[in-house]
Length: 374
Image 1 (cartoon, rainbow, N blue to C red):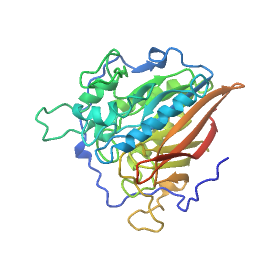
Image 2 (image 1 turned 90 degrees about the vertical axis):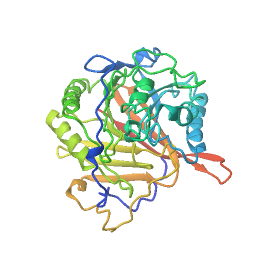
Image 3 (image 1 turned 180 degrees about the horizontal axis):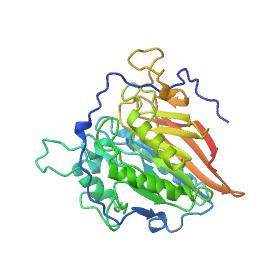
């Protein structure tokens, strides 16, 4: 096992001076598929294994400044695909945790911020929307609807070339809605949409859908892992966003009312890597993993201890432990889910990428974890 990072802080924080900007909420686009918005991964990857599945995860890869960083991240993931080609450790796809483009989700930003960096990535890319993907530039003369470009890239009705993708060979994905469930042989991914506000907002319609999805996937807990993906981080110890009480309350009340708890919750939004363990009142332990160091130039630092602007003594944090973090390097996750002797094991590795002044990079395995998801 790797030696754990010398964590000083062990609790998440709230950011006292952060505004809860609910006025930024944007209406959701109409679904492109039928309720209950399920996508069987075999429609995209017919050869996906039912014994071991490996994939990449990263969030917040977009941005204007230092664009070479996102290229390095994408290239390192592509290199791993080449290294493990022909083995059961081959990453079959990437799951993007949101904020594909900045600062607004305009079609013109997809070539430099997404299509060009990820052109060499060999696998399919699934995605949830981040707040920047959904935001709208008030000065844009075309006045596009929120998530118009994102929907054309990820929520099409069929796989086909994308009109604003330039020379990219990447085809559109067929996610049936902005929030949806990706069904795979070894895991169900319930993919939530947190909208534009800083701390996230879940509509009542989406909440009702989520509760039904929890109940359905909970009935399959002996056969599949349950993974929750949402851009906004429920728990964070950073100084830019801090934790989202809105997301904490939404997830906890949903889990407790259905008595269904996931194997893990993955988020972006915060531009660093953090791994928490949350213990719910019934004793269930759920990892909350933030992987938003995917390429945006500004990383978010972890709050210092005893800073009154970032308190960590709230009762909401009594059963949450920060296990590990990296706030000074970029990186991505490689996740494996394997069925072994009637058990399902989720294993994760976070790779950090150190970048020199000459823009040379070195990749290091920084953190690894393993859970029996049953």
